Length: 212
Image: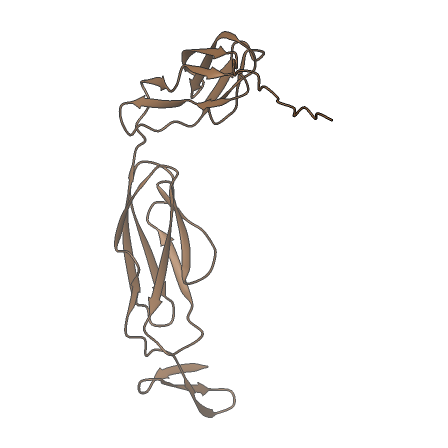
């Protein structure tokens, strides 16, 4: 068959075999397509959602999404109008969304920053805790803003003080031990902590004396 353009919203379809002409309505009346962002900056591993808006009354909008460099920024295959992009590696890539009916496009330039590596860190927090109580330790990394993939806490003597994955130390019995923190499996620091006995005075009990 043959398709020829007539006027906005119509096409003439000539079926040669049947020698019959028919007119079909199309959705070429799109006027604009846009994204919620025209540029964005992400760190490696970060994700962001892009949403496309098409100026049209049509309900059968079909969009095509592409990344100029998927090795830097990838695009998922979710909902047609909303996609999640993922920063894969440092660099710049352009995300393009195209309305397949009208050919209109919109773009978003994505800059991916290389992660800043941790070169050193310190452990901060209260170095004393009473038996049965808790205190939380934290790490301060160098340089400021550096990212790490893993942080593992451990106690040299869990019978004196234990520590969980959040750096929360619990006093178990009186004594002193070291709490260790390891970042990315390569840099380890120790923090001495003293567990003090709970010397709260015993409560005195008073009983009334009944005199008959």
